[in-house]
Amino acid sequence: MKNKTMVSVNCITYNHEKYIAEALNSFIMQKTSFNYEILIHDDASTDRTAEIIRDYEQKYPDLIKPIYQKENLYSKDVDIDDLNTERATGKYIAVCEGDDYWLDPLKLQKQVDYMEAHPECTLCVHAAYIVNVVGRKIKPVRPSVGNKIFTIEEVIEGGGGLFATNTMMYPRYLDPNKPDFYKKAPVTDYPLVIYLALKGQVYYIDEYMAAYRKGVSGSWTNTEQSS
Image (cartoon, rainbow, N blue to C red; front, side, top):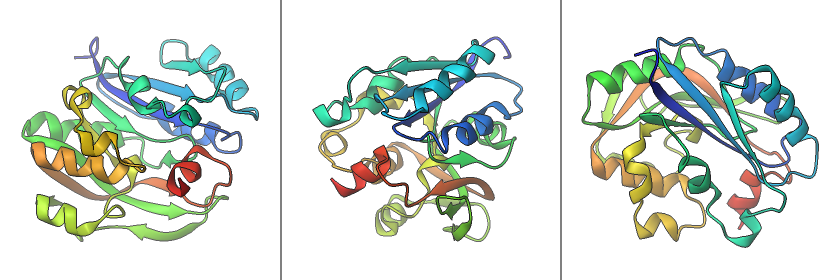
């Protein structure tokens, strides 16, 4: 099991120089019984984000696999998410943008353990904290007290804020077949959750294992949410 890549971390980043090291450190600290890879797509940041990623790439060349764009593709309506995940080799994809980070070094292990034991599970999520630009907790994202299987109806009614994006793990085989309603959506987090919920079981782990940052000015996240 150790020789096979089990998880591909999908990290999209743009102008995250203040935050990207925290994100990368939270990926690197993961303790797993399996191999995983960190796929970073820097969308032509105008700050020091790419420089910081290069430093980490030199230290962890077998783990960190970056793409450094010379021109911003998001502004050209290129689906940079798919561009990053199409090179994934893991059985599962875990999502975390460059201004967010994980809290638990066993996050990937816990999610993989569940998904391996429950192949009907097409999305595994968990509790998170919404934090501000300096990492101070604002509020929790905790859709259930206790572990829970969510129905498609509950997912739709819960809206886009039901789960924090950087808690998501799903099987890679579902990634290339995203439907039109996902591809046409200006913000893709919620449509992705709906798509994955339609394909199988959504399982929520009631543990705080991630921090989702709000209020980063000029970031890819804010640009997408305001578009």
